[in-house]
Image (cartoon, rainbow, N blue to C red):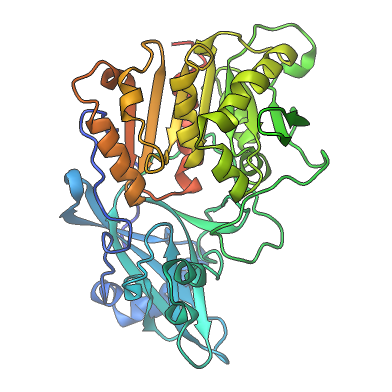
Length: 452
């Protein structure tokens, strides 16, 4: 197996948005018999020892001559499972890669036996693919649970019920704190400042569903992160807010006010993704200018769905109450160019609503996987305020979102707003595995340490 090479991923311009591949597994076909066609039986038998010795990069990556949508370079990515329970052997094994489990074709995600106690699956994927994944094993009689489930969600939950890949040292966490493994293709841009995620201790359930609610108290918060429980006057409930202060702010010496970044779904970013440490790393490396960051709580799926995708919800709360609160209590800039909104999914839509409806307050936004299927804002984007800087990021395999982004941006072609929107189509799904590093990179672009 060839070793991965790390190169920069090409940026996708606003001028040609394309949704590309479908996100149901069919777009990344399983290549049957790939391992046996490339490696001798003796070599396959030696794989467990080679992996244990650290002499192979894993997952295994082989370049190929095929090209994907838009001329993307493709690679063969091989995942392995070594059965350590010969007394109760595995009967079926499935790869639950973000956005790629096809409920209509589960065989596209199932491993095949490659040798004694060794299972493998090879996918043909873009060289820039980034994905969180889990491996689920079925033992005993009868069909695997993912074959017994009746509807799409139940199938995905059953396929995702296992755990991280024990052979892969690269891990992360999802919105509910579940541990996942991460695959990064040879052309996926790595962010050197990203800190390791911290999965929730004892979380054994699926990585799908649920939301990372904050537990009361301030124990275990990162340095220079404070928790505030405030009454949201607009939404009529208590809301947790975390404020991150940059390195050097604790000295007591008056410094220049910093930009303010406002991040939706704050509990996940603070509790599980170690984003405060990532910010410290980027600032200390003089890549990112000192910034304050307000992480805003979304609490639960029902509240999130009711408050984030509507201007009258969290967006209004930020504009009328929480932005003034931050400016009055922390050493942050009071200008719109120094205020950036960001979020993912419904949070991405909320970030866009903020700069559309309150451009005098929020001059920048980074919208990750915005749920434009929920609200058509094409007409509003036509009159995007001239000073607003908007960056949109979407995953190629989160089909509906990528298609809606392509349609929305396509409707802007030829207009002035189109020239001021940066668009990235990333080879990934609806996935924290790329949201975290890409957000950090976007903040460096917005507020570089050198000020340019």
